[in-house]
Every structure is written in C-alpha cells, then in structure tokens.
Length: 260
Image (spheres, helix red, strand yellow):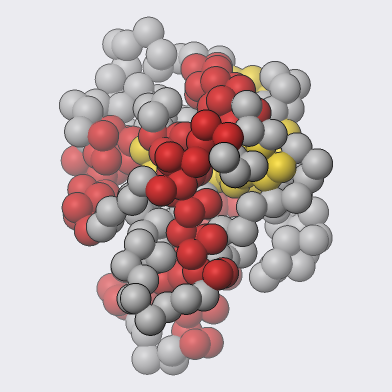
C-alpha cells in the first residue's frame, strides 16, 4: 500500500483519448440550451473558502507564472454555486482519506479578467510564438483555452456561471502533486491525456508521475459528476453548458451568475 491508500486504483486507471470530448466541446455555447425553468437556474453562490475548501485566486496576486502580475478586475474570492461547492466538499473528503486536499485556483471569474486573456494576453502570446497566426486560426487557438467573454444570458463563458472551477490536488501539508505542467500552461502540455500514451522507451519518472496524478484528479472529480476540459487538466465544471456538452445532458442548469 502506498501513501495514496485506497485511491491508488484511480492513479492506475487510464483517462483515455480525449478526442471525443474535444469534438463534443465544439460550439457548445450555441448548441446547448440553458434550462431556465429548472430549480438550479437561480441558485445562490457561496465562497468556497468559507465552506471549508482551500485555495487562492490565481489572478488576484502577483505570484502567478507566467503572468507575474495581478490581473485588473480580478477578485480574491472563490465563488461557486451552492451545489458545485457541495460536490467539491464530497471530493475533498474522499481525497482526505489519503491525506490529500483540493486546492482551488479560480472559480467564478469577472468579465474583465476573461476579456483580458481572450482579447489581449492570449492573442499577443500566440502571435509572439507564431507571427503568421491571424484571423480565424488565431481565434480558434485562443478559444481552445480561453472562452470569449459574453454578457448574453444564452451563452455565458463557463467561469461566468459559477459552475466552473480550476483546481489541483495537494497534500494537506501544502505540497502540490506533480501534474506535469504549470496551471494555465496553455499549450499541448496541458491536455488531459498528454501523458496517457507514453512510449515504452519513456522511463521518465516525471512523466509517469504526472500521468498518475492527472488520472487521480480526473477520476475523483468525474466520479462526483464533474466534466473535465479535454485540453486543460485543471478545469472541471458541473451544471454549465460545457458540462452538458461533455456529459451528454440535454441542457445546462446555470446561466450567468451574480457575485455575492
């Protein structure tokens, strides 16, 4: 028995190829309706830390590589819909049996932050790497990671709903599990299945540990009903349009959320 106790099986369970999820995610904000007549539509938000979860908003401080500055408009709160927070608490209790806990990077996100990354930071960074990127190709690559900001009740960005969360796992003493990349490393390295197809010649302990830890986080979250972004190992959601698209639900529960 390792230090992961009863969770070791999850570290050994493959996530599998995420191509189907990538296809399901395409156009989700125009394809998936939001059921405004459901009981969860107007559900209140809560601050995750006041509920007993650990975390720190990544954009509200300046120790946040690769940005290294506070993002204008960022909130230091970690706001979530009540049902989403309850689900995370159940995941946290299960992780706690092995001495682990969830650590949240981001939850409800102000429009100003979404706009900064979608309209300014990400296009600039992509064009710095590849000056030929422009037009539709540039937008497609930006929106692989950063959804367009919107004030439309019919097509909110996932983090604007209070149903999306960015997080990782760490030991309760504060040491994070190795996931193979920084949070917000918006490159192919961040793909959920990045380490699922290691060649027999790859004996890298770093890659194999990242594979096992991504599996652990993935299965802890998905077994509680969350859906994971196929190209971001840290992003999960429940109740929003992307969750509905990935989970095969007919409609989303949540639209735009009101901060508390």
